Image (cartoon, rainbow, N blue to C red; front, side, top):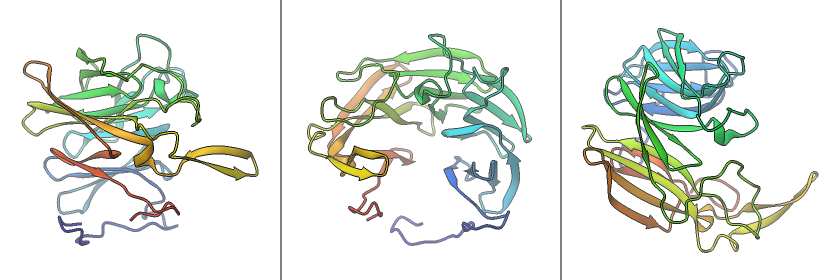
Length: 273
């Protein structure tokens, strides 16, 4: 889509044929225009050139958790859970030439647990040609890592209202939703790191509605932008200090480009507006 929302390119459609996508988990565009599409239903990472021609299709293992960072057309770092004894402790994996080259990022404060997504889910963004920022979702801790798995240092903050958590409970009217890191992005010159933090809206109780299924009755957010706010923070990496912090009465989902965030508005029938 162009800046006015008009469709400009069709890469591929969904469908049963093997060359089509079955379920797109993520799509990211590198600074040079390289496009990466993760399709975990077909267990593959598709890399396209800036002209949107397919460069390579690599097979993936395990469960993809949402973040992928590209380093040229042949190398990528993915947040995945691979349930083998040797790889299960590591949530971050570097692939090069279609081969898993390095796995790293095991938490020092406890074992990775497949049944607790908070222990394995990470948000990531490229920092340089050989490094990336990695954030835990349940704690304001953002680490600088090399693609070979060397840890440099952590940025740690304790913003008001953000308590570290392990289990994300089902929605209820007795406890507000947990805060979480929802996205991070370093700008092109590597000077600023932008952080999106999902925090409870003051209206979170009234945003819940009860639904009944065959499995019973439970609560879901009817309006996610009334259930969550977004705290946007900007960190100056030269001083490792926060230079801007503002809370918005809106749920921002992620970054569309440097300094550009996006939201998704849904109708009551969960269809995009």
